[in-house]
Length: 263
Image (cartoon, rainbow, N blue to C red):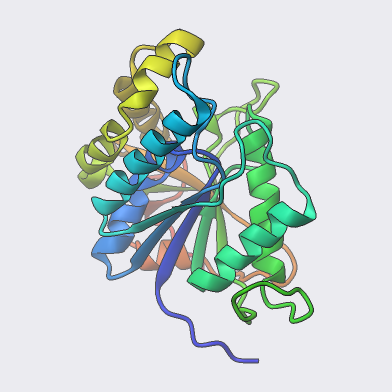
C-alpha cells in the first residue's frame, strides 16, 4: 500500500540530552532544509539525580528537553519508561510502534546498537523493530498502520566506542560547524545534568566534552565539528542515503573531505 509521507525527521533516543549530544546539529540542518523535527525519549531521565525524587527530576528533565526541542521549532514527547529498565518486551515495543505510527516519519535517527549502556542498545533494537513493523496491520495500537519503512540512521556511540572500548566508526559524518553554537544552546537547556554528571561520572565539563567529541568526529572528515551516522541497510529498509541527499553540502565520507551522496 502506498503511503503519503512528508519530510519529518524523528529522533528517538534513550534519555533527555542524548539527542543534543549526538544529533542536534544535524536536526538543525534538516530544519533549515524544510523538515519538520520531532524528538522523543524512552525515559524522562528519572535516574539522573543524587538529590531529587523520581517525580521531581522527571518533571525537570522533560521541561528541559521540551525547551531544547523548541530551539528547532520541534516537538518533544517521552515514552515514560524508567532509566536502566528500558526492556525489549511487548509493552515497550508497542509504545515505539505507536510513536512511529503517530509521527509517520520519512527518517528516523536513534541510538547506536553498540554503546556503553544497555539502555542505549535496547533503544536501538526497539526502534529498528518498530520501523520495520509499524505497517503490520495485525499489530494493534491507537494510530493506524504506517505503510512506509523510514530511512533509519544510528547515531555515534557515546565517546565513539563500544562497551569493550573498541572504536565504533561512522560511515558518514555531517559537518555541523555552522550549527555548533545552536547545538551547545540546546545542550545548555539540560541544566540539571551538570550536577548529576559531576557527582556520578566525575565530569564537570558537560558542554566542553560535547564540543570535544564533535571536534573529534569532525576531524574524521576534515571539518571543525561533525556528527557521525551509520545507515541501517537490512532487508526491507530503504537503500538510498536520504540523509546525505538532503544535506548534500554537509555529508562527508570519513577520512575524506569529499561530499558523500550514495544514490
